[in-house]
Length: 131
Image (cartoon, rainbow, N blue to C red; front, side, top):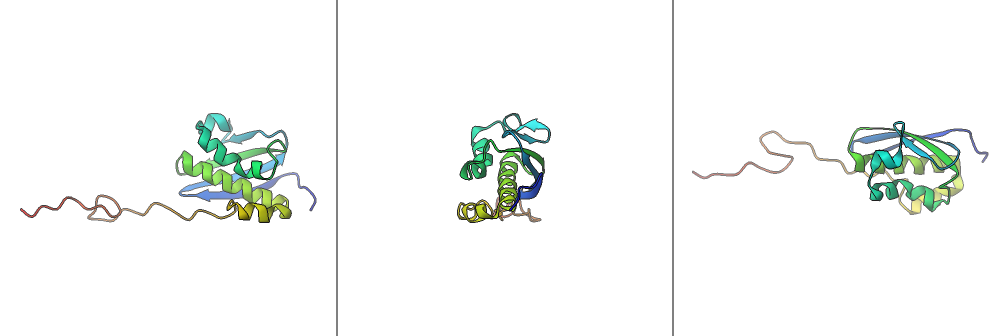
């Protein structure tokens, strides 16, 4: 498959949604206009985001522009990883089995359960008093 100029994909995790655009470049990753190291901060989150790139040996091949919204930093990091993996698979079909085997193309379906009325949280009850 011929390499396209710009490849886009959407990544999701928890309440976070990211739009990822990959273009040939130097390996720079920007999230909402800021460098990813400055945006995420923690090394563990940076490692999560770089996982699909390291797996496919393409850390220095692309410039990645990300628009992230919703959720917290952890959810956004997972959503960015999902989006990058989907963009890589769209760019080169031969990478799909490798990314699939590593579990990077599967959307993590876990979300916070919504709060119920008459309860403190989704399942926690108020303290029971007999008298």
